Length: 194
Image (cartoon, rainbow, N blue to C red; front, side, top):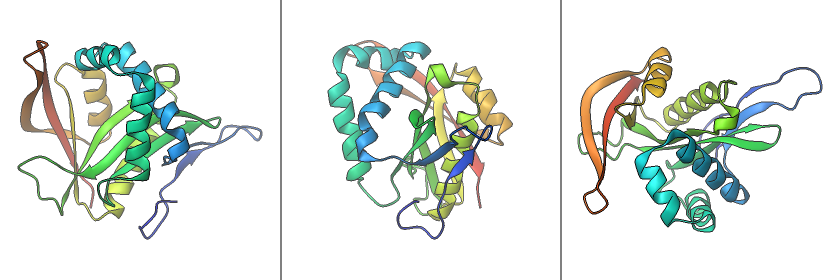
């Protein structure tokens, strides 16, 4: 159950009578290490330049500490970490929060920052459950629009989100560091959620 909102946001699906349900729920502090592991595997598999650079500079324990803090001490009540769970294992994660973009209305625009499904668990519906839970969470937190930045060349994610009703809003940016020569071009997608 999500703390501080009117209704619980749990998206689940069960396969067969003996199967454990696949679901999305709020992350628990004890899952920080599993979340960090999923994030590391996804960054490695997706060959994201910034992710690969960070993999060499940040160890799993440090990443787990950051996730533990994000779950147990979020900067504000509308900052949430959600996990997709299958067979009692974390297989995906997402974060929702007020949009930090300079052109946003913090009372109306929410954002999905991290959105990751473990490479070994993809194409099993976890991403769909996770995106629906994110939208439900943002809506429950009072937002009427959702935003998500993705790498300009991330065609699979763009198609996935487009099929879920998201569209480019014309915003684009470049992130990274000139020191290490890594620059990532991103585009922003949005959807109405009220």
